[in-house]
Amino acid sequence: MKEDFQYYMNQCLDLAKTALDTGNPPVGALIVLDGEVIGTGIESGKSTGDITNHAEILAIRNALKNGYSDKLYLAKMYSTHEPCIMCSYMIRHHKIHEIVYGSDVPLLGGLTSKFNILETEDVPKWGNKPKIVSGICLDECNALTTQFLESLNKL
Image (cartoon, rainbow, N blue to C red):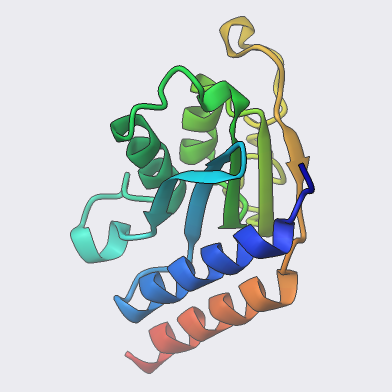
């Protein structure tokens, strides 16, 4: 099966725009298994007041609700932004085997921060670390982040 990061990242960007339109950071995520989207998430922590409503967590919850709990280890997650340490913990717990994302999140990211949860091998029950592909649709992801930051300065 041909890998098409652009196809799935475009869907994530659409989800991120929806998040931005509701006053949330522009993050959209989805989970793909065998070419089928099995879970989607739109960042909504700010609008709901529930910090756990990050796009990646909501995508995992959606995939679980859709009956894929036993197949997440075969799935790929796409996100506009690097999963944070909270989302990374959930990714590792469910053993999602590949992560594809756009923008890095250096202070709180699960890969680029000092809390490198995505690559640690210190938790034996997590098994193998996921394959990670970053910088996909980077300009588009960064533009949405800039829009969000500008909207905060206007308030």
